Length: 216
Image 1 (spheres, rainbow, N blue to C red):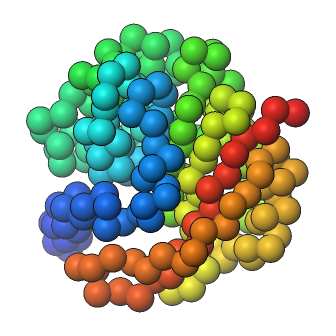
Image 2: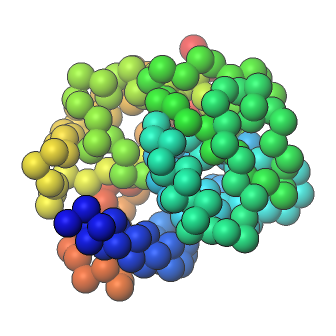
């Protein structure tokens, strides 16, 4: 039984990796991703978004994937064998990752990570489909953690959904979340609702925020 579950997950990861980045996210979000600097991908999982952003590199770019589960690092390496994905356990490890040619995979939780050195703070953060896996009482500290990771006036793309949730997922109230984002030090631009793309054959509707970090 365990083997069947594993095989199904592997097939799902392969299908997940085949999505075109342009089909998954709105054009305005894609236009906000810099091609140089520091980019972070929160909840990296098997690495699809981190790899897609790395492939857009036009110079001095470092992509940092952050995920609490080290097993996902191994899945990312298996899913993208042609990419040099480096396991990192702290910011010192990240600092030694080679820009452009490597992707950093930092194992940790945003809520618990210490503030990175200023040279490793993000110019852009992608945080897609993470909030629904966190308890409501952790959302405040999670958002403040995002603020610690970000350079002043840099953008964060925050995506979550409020319907078709599994029993283990958390339902987020958009109005309450907006207040939490403002309290954490972000301005918010609520983007038009974006449908889940084919070939998933699902009917998810995403809530997309493009937030800007404001210095306190």
